[in-house]
Image (cartoon, rainbow, N blue to C red; front, side):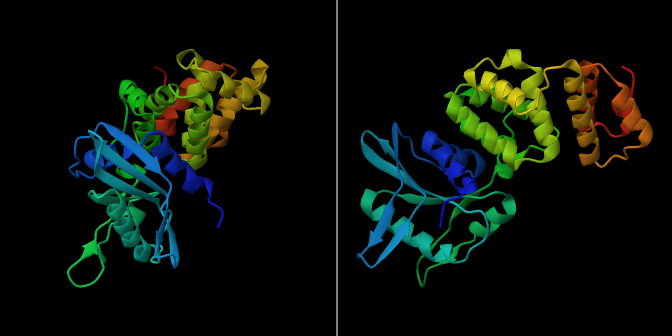
Amino acid sequence: MTPTRDHEIPIELFRERPALAAELMTEVLSVPFPEFDAVSTASDTLTQHTVAEFFADLVITFRSAGRPVMSVVIEVQQDPKDGKRWSWPVYLAAVRKRERCPTALLVVCPDSAVAAWAARPIDCGPGWGVTPLAVAPDMIPPVTDPARAARTPELAVLSALGHADGPDREQIFHAMLKGIDTLEPEQAKLYFDYVMGKISRAARQELEALVLTKPYEYKSDFARRFIAEGRAEGRVEGRAEGRVEGKAEGLLVVLEERGFEVTEAVRRRIGECTDPEQLTRWTRRAVTAASVEEVFAER
């Protein structure tokens, strides 16, 4: 089976920042973790007696003074598949035998419902069993501090995925952009495109607007490339009228996604507005407003 983007990019987050496993285990799951000063990764084929092969997505080993102190088997699981629960204990046993240190299984899921399934204890027979650790983006506390996001951009990406429709999403998106702005351009674009492909349409509109309306804040090659590609793909019109039309359409999308009744009068008011900055202000209000009237209220 060919690995999918939804499967591979979460693995890439851990491959680029292996310490992310320790952060999720301690900060989200409250699991004690030993002190370490080095970490390594491996995508392993775990072979048992040459009769069957088991493929773990990623194995991360943490070391202190050169000695393994904890290994974490990373598995990305998009939906419940009971067959995996027969394989997971094999992964743990093989890595534990090889590294000769405590070993944990961390299952990365798309949401807390799949995580609840993955975290169920596995009864391996009398006297022993395995309890997977499972985490999902919506279980991660929102990362709203740009300085922290710059230190842990992968955590900021997961935070954005989990809280894209929450009340603090502008702060979360702002922090994430600051975080991925510290990465190499190709890596930043990979993460940005992944987030854009996973969040709701209203959230996509706001995230894109944040990059396009505040380009002075994101000065990396990633931001410049995104804006250039946006122009090439028609996201940003070179003419003022095209820019206004795009913002007006974006505002209508946000209103519809929020469940507001978009009357003909509302459409006419938006369509007659020729000020792109006013449309931007209305769009930002629409994300949290309690009514359509609040969106257009004079302030």
